[in-house]
Amino acid sequence: MSDRELEARIALLEYYASLMQSYKVFILTFAVSILTVFEIWFRIPRPEPIWDCLLSLILAGFVGGISVSIGRWFWCGQIVTSAIYAPAPSGPTMGDLDRQIKDYAYSRTTWKGRFTRLGDRPILWVIVWITVVLVFFVIFQGMAPFSHVAHPSGAPD
Image 1 (cartoon, rainbow, N blue to C red):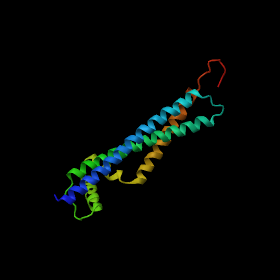
Image 2: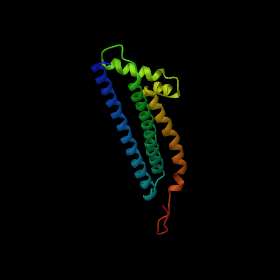
Image 3: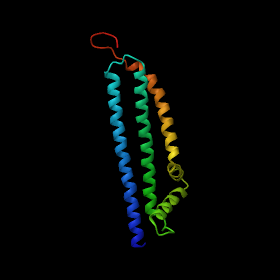
C-alpha cells in the first residue's frame, strides 16, 4: 500500500468518522427536543385542539429525525469498516477510493451490504423520515387526550 493510498484511506476514515460524530450529536439534540416538547405538552394549557395537532407533528418530526440519524450513523459505520478492508483503488483520486470502498461495502452479501447500498440514496432517507413522521403523528394524536391534566385549582383546561 502506497503512502498516497494510505493518506487517502485515513482522510476518508476521518471524514466518515466525523459524519458519525455529527449524527450522534443530532440524535442527542432530537432527544432533548422531544423532552422539551413533552414538557410543553403536559404543562401548558392549550385552549384549542390545533395545539395538540401541532405538538404531535413536532414530536413526530423529531422522532423521524432520530430514526434517520440512527440509520445514517449505521451507514457511515459500514463505510468506515469497508474502508479498512477494501482493495486498492483502480484510480489515483480520492473519489476513486471512495467509490471503491462503497463498491466493496455493497458487494457484501449480508444484510449489511444491502443496507449500505440502500443507505447511499438520499431520497430513501426522505421517504423513511416521512413514513416515521406519519406513523408517530398518528400515535401522538392518539395520546393527545391523555395529555390534558387538571389544574390544581380544579378548573378545566
